[in-house]
Length: 107
Image 1: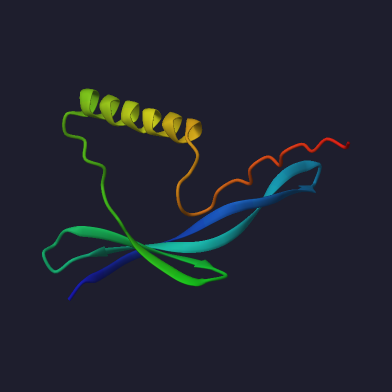
Image 2 (image 1 turned 180 degrees about the horizontal axis):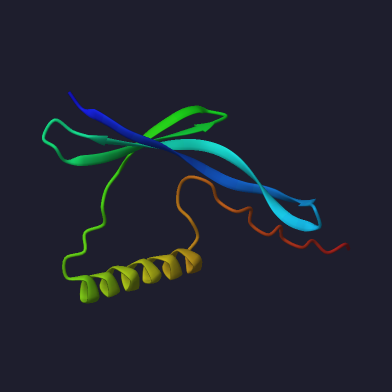
């Protein structure tokens, strides 16, 4: 049976306040990361996010660090190119920004 290791809170800053003359951040917990050790002895993690739509669960995976230099640069360049293309082309499907209304001239 898997063995529980620890829980960690996922938090976001939702504002600031003054206390004793110092500015401090106000934090809100939005979920948790759970660390476990599987039956095979390998550690693993999963998370839960709490929101208005209910609880979302997911897994945490280590980044693949093989061939770091060239592959990471290629991936980043590909992501940048895709982002730039998306900025230049109108979206198809899903939400589309409203088009500018034509200007009518009075006669």
